[in-house]
Image (tube, rainbow, N blue to C red; front, side, top):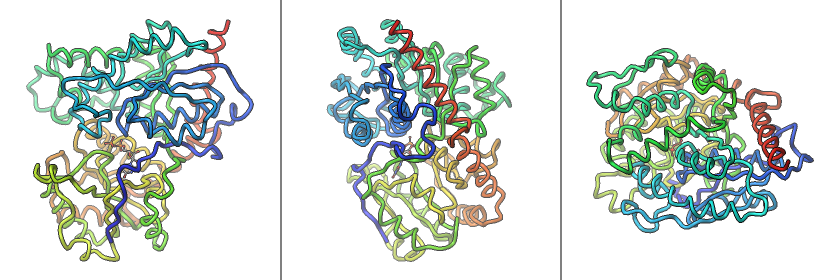
Length: 494
Ligand code: UDP
């Protein structure tokens, strides 16, 4: 079966306001005048968890303004309709940049190579934000902005308000990433095949290619690159930081970050998104297909995030591997455009869907990933190890079959495989082609009920669910963060 859904039907993630894990302390009657400015980075994997957190803040009665550019505004629709009185938007035109095609406003439209121009372009919004702030009758008491917008630290300094940096990535990734920027020359001049990170717990080491791609793009003395470096380094000066992670997964690195920063305003509030409200029509056919199955944990979900397309050879190998795994699966395989086909990207091989009929489903559009992962019959996730996918898998108790490709994915995979034992590696690298026999064998082994990785993933689920339940670590950290923001509002009011 092939299911086509429009990939344009992406909706922002929000927690259901009737969730039992909503904030117990601040739920209904703590209406406060505190006003917070939220600035997300326009890439799906960055914007969704920050909107989740914003939903929590709005539930606590905090007034919020979200900075957004016009084409990204629809992503906010579900959140805005849930909080018509507490959340407003500051819609600013996307500033032009010679390396950004006209009308592109989201990284999805340009790929990860667009990060440097995007970070530079968005910094041009500063004068308009300052003007809005200085003429506002109740200006924000704090700025909550993505770590990809580190330059907003200077903005907050100018506005004389504290900045809270939101990290849509792992704490482990952040420790390595921060170290990369602080030692950029040393790392760039290091010819060793493995780069060792002394002083980080466990002294992790990585092949150069596996370091964060946004760091690998850095070229000294290129003005855009220098600005990006300064921007990331500015995150160190944030008044507080918030991570979409939880203690059972990353306490070592959260403690390390607290020690490095020298303060305790480091909040682990994840996994965010577990009660995400999705577009109700998206993915209904897949969910119906899953509903009709019986065997718990028997289905492998295959999806490589919101941006990644595979080359033709990769698609063929993956299709063969899935066939050979003899495992039930749902494969999210967006169809490339004609132009992308000419560049070598591929769709599922001809005849594949018929050959796996009854055992596998191919979806070409956007699916409600959180709902799929938490479905009782889904037990595994063949993933690129993007951090949102990781946290969503962890709270669903689903074992990860990892194929890290770029960005933070190699580091995430290391954390899951070598430290937590909840994932196995099946391939590595954005251009690599998996061996179909090996892929089939690994999937079959990991998906069996006895696989130790699967059992550990189930235990991790208990930890993740506990973390966001009332009285859990992450739930209490959200409360602490809200309390801190309310106090900032009180100070401003005095
Ligand atoms: N996602 C989804 N449906 C899809 C594809 C992706 O809901 O069809 C969501 C997924 O749940 C996750 C995000 O998109 O929240 C992808 O983020 P991740 O960090 O895993 O990868 P990225 O897209 O940043 O590479």
